[in-house]
Image 1 (cartoon, one colour):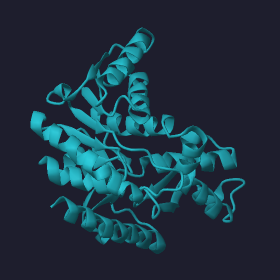
Image 2 (cartoon, helix red, strand yellow):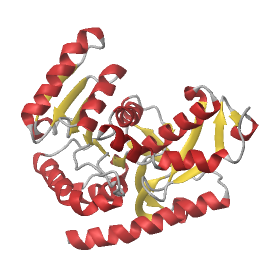
Image 3 (cartoon, one colour):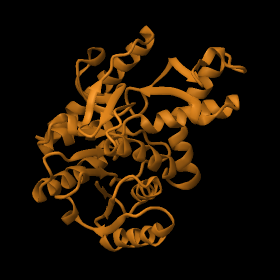
Image 4 (cartoon, one colour):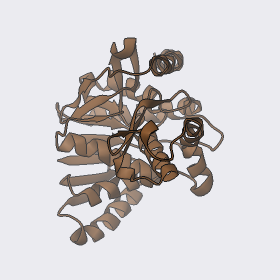
Length: 311
């Protein structure tokens, strides 16, 4: 399988490339960037480590890599400022993103290619990509709340001194201010969270607030998130490459799940080789369902402005 990372010269793209290299699952990794020297430099740096990691073909360059790519991961975009919401990025990032989509269309893709949108605001741009590229909707998905979800689980595990890999919880809805914590299904080692030693309901608001602020906290500390988002990208791409059909909170255009339509956001989604295999309307608390619907309403308002601008 060949994965091309558009924006591979930047922090997020390079971390995604490194995470995929360490995973050793995909056969080819192409680092693409408007600054091709940077992309080729990142590819060379990765290639130098390959003898100790995996037998892979790692290259750098431009859109010439797109036609034979199985997964096209778009990470290019302007960074969010510490006090800026993800939705505030829309006016700064839409034109850049659309120019990337137009270049992809110009060179062409495999009919089975999967497009993974990482650029923010990811839910808005996932919708735009699905409608502009001409691929089946199921083959265009966004990273959505996968990053928020693993951040959420890491903070719960840290607070309770639990195993991070055994901590399971979801964030759904928008990758942004209206994201929704799904406490109803949170577990550690299969044990409901409210039965785990050290848990008390008072921790819920504290942990969710820290999760929502995690991105801004990382940006403030080091200038931009890289390592965790690279891992989140790897989670999704490996699910595609291995046809794992695992449940991930990724963003896709909704056609009725939880009563939401014609907007992209994250619901429990089965991800496999064809991209979005299915969306599951699992039982949630009423306030969680309402929260996801509110996310859809908020995103739709912004989406209408963006679509009007693109017409």
